[in-house]
Length: 125
Image (cartoon, rainbow, N blue to C red; front, top):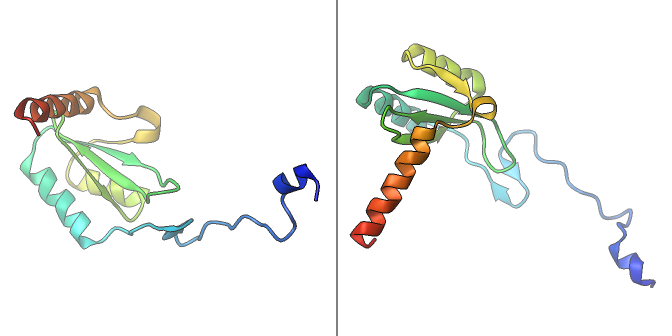
């Protein structure tokens, strides 16, 4: 056996294709959205003002998610059934929605995270 043979792929070694159902990726299992996620998003939107929605596309480790960001930067993220569902949800609740892959996430969310981190550090947590 030559030294470089260790690094060559044999014909028996083939990479598996990801499952088309969106629930298996490698050795992990991706949880699909459910009614609890949808109820959380609905109550969250109802309790805050100045909310914007950022639809995040499916990735190798997570399904489509909807990131909701309030006027002060407070945020929540939950899985949703599809990109279309996320935009329709935002339209029903009169919340502007954006594609996060195109516009990114708002600075006020990062500022909120920094404030919360500093607050936890100050409290000694």
